[in-house]
Image (cartoon, rainbow, N blue to C red; front, side, top):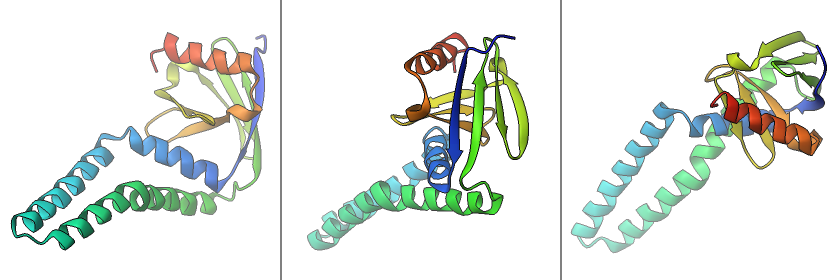
Length: 163
């Protein structure tokens, strides 16, 4: 089969942490937990305001903002980075080759090939694509290492397979 595009990615704990955070953004259980935390904080703020405890209400607003902007993302990223550290893949280069109907990834762990129809999602961030085989397993494609044509090609795959 004719090679369409090639790229490479160097796996790191930081990239894996970013991928996990992006996955969590799309996880309904994670979203539900965030809504519950937000509701609890809102109830506490309402109680504080009802009792004219304005300073306590202000503290809860700051705590709520800190929780959603810093604590939750930090803990999600940190947990993923710890798990990645166990894999001994830090700094491992991975070469990816894209064909018309599938892609291959080759690294020190071996060679794997997946048809695009096997993908469950393709998540896109400003710096990466995450080609997800299921809710927890996927490949990282760093946009910085991609030609503009490959970025367009992945976008077409995402649209064609409704990922």
